[in-house]
Image (cartoon, rainbow, N blue to C red; front, side, top):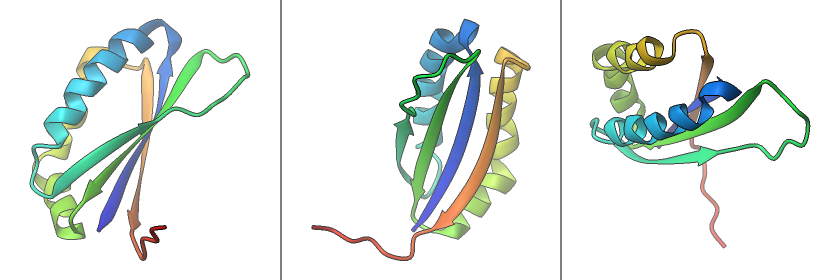
Length: 104
């Protein structure tokens, strides 16, 4: 299993609209081969900021499915957000190999 993580910084002025779009975007991502589920995390931060932060973690079956996404679909998916929101948000990405899952 692989975790594909996207960390977002979103300008406060577009946050509500971005959040609505993001749910549609995630549902579209989950249609790609190997994508099993997604979780959205919002840090509990008390400090005032001009940007909201979100982390999305996609769970995929394997690295091959993620590579297929990168080569066949990623450019189009990233372009949608850039066209709609321009420079009002930024994204960084990380990939994790799941070594072990421990369940109670």
